[in-house]
Amino acid sequence: MWREGREALQSLAPSLLLLALLTHPAHADCRTVSVTANGLPVTGIEDMALDAARNQAVLSAYDRRAGTMGGLYLLNLRSLDAPAVAAIPLATGLRPAGIDLRVEPDGARSLLAISRQEDGSATVERYRLDGATLTHQDTTAGPLLCRANDVAFLNGERFLFTSSHGGCGWGAVIQDNVLGGRHGFVGLVENDHARVLVDGIGFANGLLPDPSHDRLTVAATREEALLVYPLSDPQAPPRRIAVPGGPDNLTMAPDGRLLVALHPSPVRLALHRYGWPGGAAAPTRVAAVGPAGTEILLDEDGRRFSAATVALSWNGRLIVGSVTAPGLLVCGEVASGATGSSAPAGPPATR
Image (cartoon, rainbow, N blue to C red; front, side):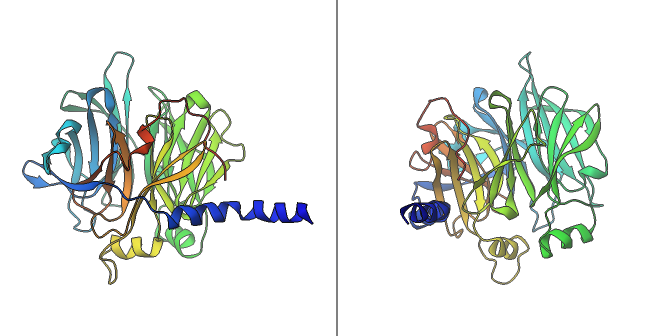
């Protein structure tokens, strides 16, 4: 009898932990910061790539609801004490999505950016960043990239990308978004050739390879889970980490935990994303996931800053971007607990 009761409690543990997290939201000292470029507001900073050594970040932004073109921008993070900051345009006239920055052995910076096209296709653009000058180097195109969402370097030549759906047309969207299919995948590009590395993911979103721990973490938005694969054997069954919301972009905090932007309500996100009735705001939630479990760092109803899609930890601050909101949300040390430890990180805890 005791054993049966213990097993029942163990089966309830994930639900009880999520309930505890949701009923004890984090309250942080946060403020919105207006970001401009060439005097114009920058809206929809969906993804950011941190260059901590240079105290700067590359921003990927475009205003989806307005339908205007966006671009890639360079932001001096030390300017974030001001209520309004100016970013440097690196590349404009784009519809960028996920980005990744790599420091090359010679100290140069390489940048990957997903660029969505008017015809529904997408490409991955590779750049070299020298100071505030971005030089285009290469374009990767192909049918597997049409639903590309995020991108990450593996080394100087190879990179990974996620595809939210398994195909390019509306049929693929209906199959997953309406009928509940799981056809998202992670792709690998090497020698300018793209192939599927692992599939069967419910809306594959952010990804973060960590060769030092032989792991690849993928955000499965519709599954409300992080999927952790052995990087050396991605065909192996993944470990699943339940998270309190649909995970979006992933970044690494200084203490080794993963920072995850979460969408607590897919319905409210959809209403807000497309400007439909009832979509004036969508909740913003950010969590840190590590060996000890999941800690919610920021939990807001979205009236101040809606639909967070990415969070960075820098210099004791949590810097948050959104798919729809103008500018950034910057939070103090209360929210950036992920910076409080320099202990080596182990694998994220599986719940």
